[in-house]
Length: 423
Ligand code: AMP
Ligand code: MG
Image (tube, rainbow, N blue to C red; front, side, top):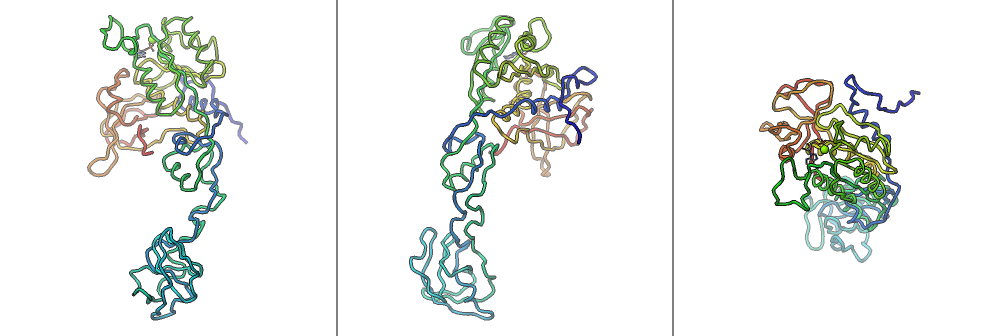
């Protein structure tokens, strides 16, 4: 048997950068589901992860019923050839079963969803009969058992309907309601602390509408992070702005680690004189990886401070979003106990040529659309600069260009990670 080799920081490429695939494998290895659960009502379970198997307490359908509007008979009363007229023993509506025992040799008029009376096993659709108020003339062409939904045909009582690790969607909410399940165990929401670093930053909370001084800019990353995290339904701890200063960074790490399962910072993660995040991580915790073979997002620190996982995202606003979707979101889904954590990959035809040099993964902002001929194509959003959040506003996917790929020609197939999903 092959011995599994754990990905390590030494698996760097010739530029000293860690391949994205190795970083992903490290995350998968390091981040385990929280072992904290809570019981919630079905409506509250939306976007949460199911902790225990949900078993159906009932058969679905609960009783054998008609799949069509027609006449319920016993197959033994159907003629082998020609026609036969049977007396009618009443009408069955959905939710209004026959009250009395149906006499042998009788048929009943039955509506879709109506409970099959004891003694009947086949429904002949109304278009295939001649009927009056009191009798129905049938032929023998409908196979025995046709047009009937048997009790337990879809789900048997006791059967697992939702597996642990399932991220619950509106369909799951409806399914549980259909089974009479009103509460379930889910994994607790991860607590996520986040802050921005940078002396140049001014907070919206204190500086909105004010004129910025030279070299100052509004902190947007904390608000983008807030929005992306809010969508994931995690518990948010907004720690505000942290100046470019070793002591302040240490203090922020300490505070965050005391209350969060995962910490996210933006900025200060390069090797410049004002970048304190990676050094503080190395000093107070441990660094799993730092420099990835990707663009944007090359300086991306990942490690651990106390019991909390830590992501030091780059400062560039687009890089924040790309690294969040590609690394933080799968990590959060892991913490939440989800079994499906990686983004959906879709193939599309590139509308234009895309410049790219081999050696690293590149994420470009794309617009996925259906061309007039029905093919799925992807266009680049205009300017792709790492600071341009407007390009993220236009985009509905990331175009993921793997390390080995060079220039993309118009018409080449590329892979994309869509931002959207139906549920
Ligand atoms: P840094 O990685 O700290 O050198 O940041 C890189 C660049 O990203 C900075 O020069 C800023 O232009 C930008 N930046 C960093 N943090 C933020 C933030 N919180 N909001 C908006 N832009 C930021
Ligand atoms: Mg900075």
